[in-house]
Image (cartoon, rainbow, N blue to C red; front, side):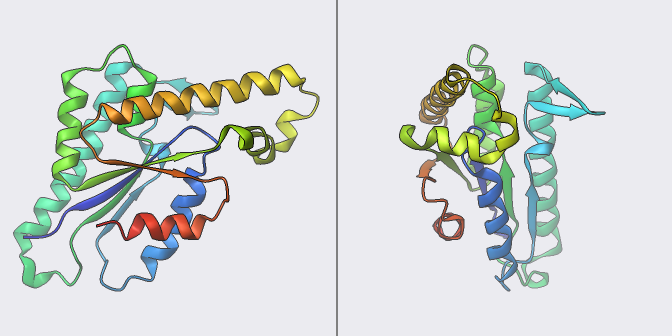
Length: 207
């Protein structure tokens, strides 16, 4: 039977998910034994999407259905791997990386934590999923926000920047709270040092 395992990268904007994902891809590419890999960036699973140049916020049911479809796809691929037999597989088994998934849903809809999202998390748990929550320390939030897209902050007041920092801190805490309520094991990694390669190694070689 093939080994099913995966990583879910979660965290608020500016925490470093895209940078860590890039380093994970580079690390995975050097692993000759890991050939069957599915990597889906946040564009395939997050609540907020850009459609024809305009931002669209998916509703609770819409987003839940989207997540169900992604999980069903992964399970179908893994079932195929089982059917063709272990002798036909050189790889360790199907390995997946998802960006912004179940915690993104929980944080977006904190008052609608349904049995369906819990069931979805149970399926991900059975698939060997491990969640990585990326965070930034309070004293480094302003620098991280302003350095990502400097042009967006030209002319902004100190109050504007403070509001953005407070929002990030609030959202980070909500991610922590929701992670505690999920069956999927979650490891929090602070990304203040921006050592993306080191974080990727820590994540990739999780048991």
